[in-house]
Image (cartoon, one colour):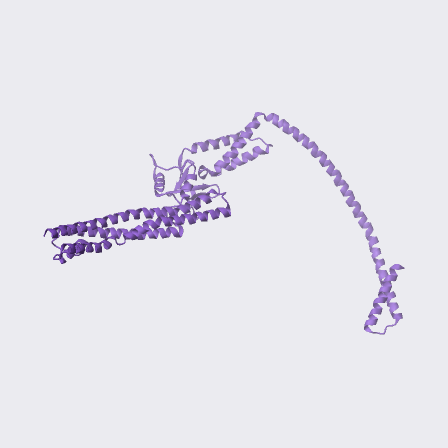
Amino acid sequence: MKKGFFPLMLGVSILLFNVHVSGADISLDRLLDNVKAGHVRDKQQQQAREQVFKSQRKTQQQQLNQIRQERTQQEQRSASLETQFDENEKVLVGLRQELNEELGNLKELLGTLQQTTAEAKVHFDTSLISAQIPNRSEKLAQISQKIGQSNELVSLGEIEHVWFQLLQEMTEQGKIKQFQANVVDNSGQSQETTVTRVGIFNAVAGGKFLHYDSVTGLSELPRQPQSRFLAQATELENSRTGVVNFSMDPTQGQLLSAMVDSPTLIERVHQGGVVGYIIIVMGLVGLCIALVKIVLLNLTDIKVKKQTSQLNKVNINNPLGRVIQVYEKHAGSDLESIELRLGEAIMKETPRLNAWLMAVKIIAVVAPLMGLLGTVTGMIQTFQAITLFGAGDPKLMAGGISQALVTTVLGLCVAIPMVLLHTAGSSRAKRIQEVLEEQSTGMIARQSEK
């Protein structure tokens, strides 16, 4: 009664609202018939649904019973497996104890053998002998894994194999061998060539030093050492008997790699940056000025010496000739006037003799100051890098300080030759000036005697 009453009242309300909105003239009897028809139709649909639910209830109950029965079987099986697992664990513990008792001292032997095979495998991966005899570490890895499983003992042949590999490594370390192998050049191309191996220390091919890696194999060093070492490598490859001088790396490539990584002179110069380039330009300019000036002073000195031996034959292409010309021009004047004229002539020649020497002196003074400027700026950059990235990497600090000191070295390399050249040029100019003063004094003395 309650279930049908509320839907009926809701339908009547909706129909009355629609009638009120649309303004249509619908009778109440027709409205009541429609409501009754809808109620009957809904009731029929509900009954049909109840019939479907009742027909499926039996099937669903059967499925539920089957699932419960299967769950019970699985629980029983799980309990059985747990019981069996506990029993097997007890048996396994007993078997392990029995195995340990049977092994006795053999267990220590197997532990030592496993440790030895593991260490030998690591050594073989980086040994140059593996370049000649590849795939040596694979068998050792299998033996080490077999020992670690502890469910199967290693055979006597496998133990002898480990002994043989270690003995072979010891024997080959003292030999120089040539063999064919693929070598990767710096362009990435691989080519089979003859490789000369010096124990476990160095390998060369085609006059170049090689590097061995277990992944890439033999490859050329990105940058080869100095030419004298390459000449030794070529001599070693071409030699068949006798003694050959060869620089061997006892650290198995670490020392050679460090030597190769060290920057060359050109790279050092580039590390100086803009300040370094300015210092070099200043040095080249100062060197050209000093050399040209010294050559000119030498020619002037030669001409002055020639004029000294020929005082009666005046040549105005040298300072002394021009001074003599002034003396002859004013020979009829009084002694004091001649002395002043000669002093004036010498003073005119002095700037010509000392010309450009001051520029060389300035370069000698400025070059180390420029080097100090580059060092200070480089140290500032180094400390800024330390502030950003920390001081955990010593190479970062060492590289920055080394780069900062390059400008100081360049400044000193420019300043020292400039000081020597300036001294040489100044001494020659002073010597010529002394000759002029000496000859001038002699001319005044002769004039005084007259």
